[in-house]
Image (cartoon, rainbow, N blue to C red; front, side, top):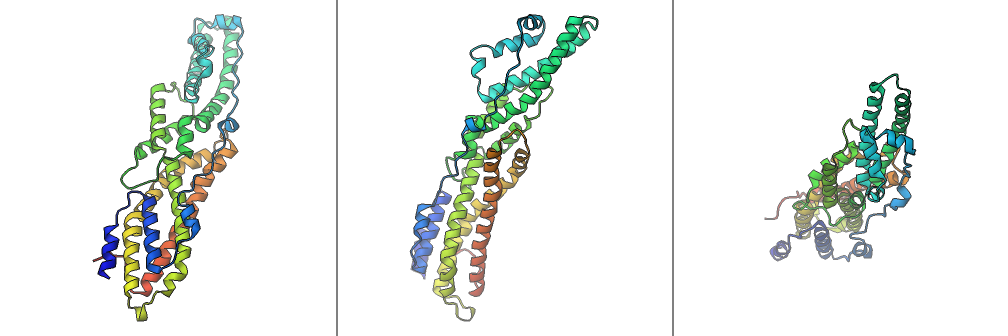
Amino acid sequence: MSASLFTLLGCFGGNTVKHSIEDYAQRLSRVIDTPLPDTFNNNITTPLPKLADSTTLKHTVEGVSINLREFYALQDCELGTVVAERNTSLGKSQLPSQRLVYESKLLTVLKSCEAALSEEDETNKNNAALAATIALWREQKTQDYTKTWANLIQGSQELRLALNTPERLMSVEHNKDALSSVNALYYIDSLHIQNQTPIDSSELEQQLQIIRSARLPATLWHTQQTLTQNLSLLTDMLATELDTVSCPQGRASDKAEILRNVFYLFFIEEIQPVGSLVNQYHYKLAPLWEDWLEQPSLHEEFKRYIRQQSQDGFDKYTRAMKAHVNLWQDFLGRCNLSPVPPV
C-alpha cells in the first residue's frame, strides 16, 4: 500500500487538464489492470467542428448612391467629408471593425445633417428636398448597420479565432485575459444597437485584441469537449471494473483505497477544478449566446455552431461529469470510503 501510494504522489502534478486526464487514465488502467480503449488515445483532444467560412456568412452591404449635385450640396455638412472617406482606396478595403466604425459615424452625421438642413431654412425647397433624401439614406443605412455588425461578429479574424481556434485548454492558473474577454465580448454585443455617438475606433480595436488574445469561447468549448469525451470513455471502462473490486461487508480493500487515492489526486484535485471553471464561464457567457441566437442579422449556420457548442456541448459535458461522479459515489459508498487526501 505505501509503495503504491508513494508512486502516485511522486508523479502527481500534470500542468494541463490534458496531462491530468492522461495521468488519471493511466493510473486507473494500472490499478484495475485493464488497458485503455484505443479511442481514448486517439481522441484526447479532438478539434472543434469547423466554423463556416466567412464568405458564406457575409452580408452584402450596398452603398448609398449620391449624384454629383447632391454631393456638392453636402460640402457645408460633415456628411460630405465622411462620404468622401468611403470612396478612397483605403475606405473601400476596410476591415470589418473599421467598416462598423464608419457606418456608425455615417449614421451620426446623417442625423445631424438632416436636422441642420431642416432647421436652416424651412422655406428653402432645395434644403427641404435634400433633407428628405438624407432621411431615406438614414433609413437604409440603419438597416445596413446591423448587417455590418453581423459581418464583424461572423467575419473578423479576432472573433473567428476566439470562437473556433483555441490555443490551449483551460487551466486553473493560466487563463490569460479570460475575465477581460467576457467584458469585451459583451461590449461587441452592445454595438449591434446604434448609439447617439459614433463608435470609438481605438476602444473597439482594443477590445478585439483582448478577445483575440484570450480566445475564451473556443478555449471553453474545447475544454468542455475534451472532458466530455474522455470522462465518458473512462466511465464506460470503470463501470464493470469497479464492481469487481472487493469490499467485503463494506470494508475497503487495499485496491479500493488505492483507487480512491487516484480519484482524489487526479479527478478531485486537478480535473474537477477545471470543470468548475467551465461551469463558471459557461454561465457568464450564456446570456450573450442567447442574445446572438435571437439576432436576425446573424446567419443560421453561425447560430447552429453557437448553439451546438454553448448549449448542446454543455449539456453533454454536464451529463458526462455527473455520470462519472455518480459512478465513483456508488463505489466509494459501497466500500465506506470518502474522497479525502491520502495519508
